[in-house]
Length: 347
Image 1 (cartoon, rainbow, N blue to C red):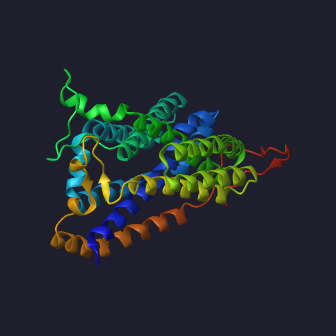
Image 2: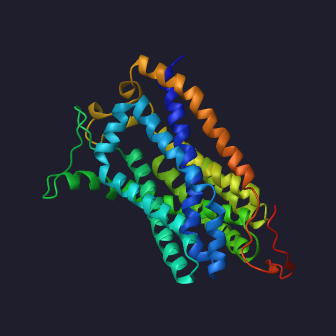
Image 3: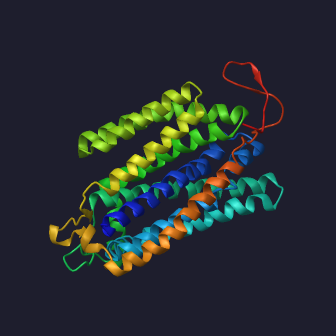
């Protein structure tokens, strides 16, 4: 068995699950104050992710752990080249977690509004930062043959070296794509998991934004020549149609697949190179060159067989338990047709 290839697939799968699951978390986080006009509606948006957000973040731990254990050189290059953005991600995740957990600790609209503001700001910045990081993976880092990350000479020294990749054209494009994908993904999730006016607003937002994002994806296809982006664009077009036809489960499924396809496209854009060097091919981080030893890969294979299925089973169970809709208000709500619809907590 080719263990480096196997564990690259596992690493990509872990990153895909993280971005798919946290993608709608981030979207709900900054869409809640936008779509929720009252404290009750904003609270309903938060309750859709309240039982699952911390479980979704487990896949970040899994993705980072697998990357570190199976491809230590890849992990080292990414961390050394992007350590300030990664520190920012950790701080933003902490702020977001506190806002989610503390929102219900005090029954005051002003307290709720403050928590919602921190949740929205941190979620938006997380979507943009992660998108920019994925853009850096496509563009590459200034890696020398010795593995050191270089940068233009400047007074900021190491600070410049860590921030410079985040202002490249690919990073900026990735940041915008991250926010737009989180918007569509979060809107389809809210339309699937809520009732009443919040459900209607979320569905309309998905219908409005998915076609624009699909068009942008086609522009990226023409510029970068990545065939997988065409699949993502097609899935986003289906998402818009499904949301318009009120097929909310299909809309969420296709937006999830669009995120997954985009992430896979990023990680496989330069195979067998995992992280290209913008200086010379001698600095490229390759799949086999970055892989751990055969003995280490065999050891983590034994651990992975036990741990990963358990994590997947637990998450599937938790989503089944919390599968019902969350009411976004009291009393009958009106759909787009104008006919009163009962607000039901069940599916």
